[in-house]
Amino acid sequence: MAYDLAGPLATDNASFGGRAETDAIGSIEVRAAFVASAAAIRHMKDGGRIINIGGCNAERMPFVGGAAYAMSKSALQGLVKGLARDLGPRGITVDNVQPGAVDTDMNPAEGEFAEMLKKLMALPRYGSADEIAALVAYLAGPEAGFVTGASLTIDGFTA
Image 1 (cartoon, rainbow, N blue to C red):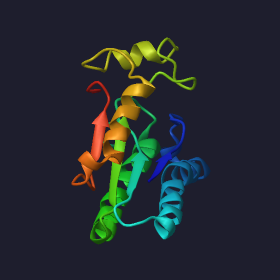
Image 2: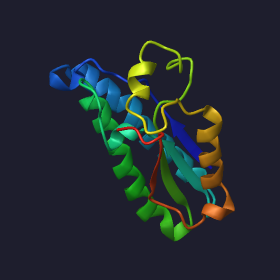
Image 3: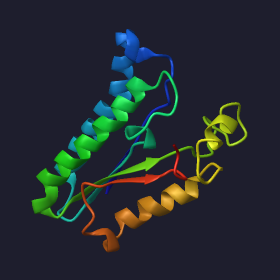
């Protein structure tokens, strides 16, 4: 099994002219997942699992300045679908977990950004690392052997 987890949220309007910043976001979010997957595939036995950790912003961006970040998360969806098709004959599944706000050191549930985010959620609270880990554990297990090419959002239904 291989999994990829990358990058901080960037909201500095990098998509409106900051090519270096946009390239950095792409390198962290997309290139890293591609390189890690390629390395894992060379050593992975048939029936393995690749699980990427993307983000709910692949499907919606509720605030200004996140276009490049959203673009990078959407690119992970395409990578997952392509790899799922390529690796399916080997029984290798490839999926993408798309968390929303999760209580971490980089994005604390009581931080300055938190109250704004909670107002965008149907379940107005941050998720926990354990909740994300439970979805990843399911995808890594035998019960998910027919789940591939999926992007599974776990975000408290963020607008």
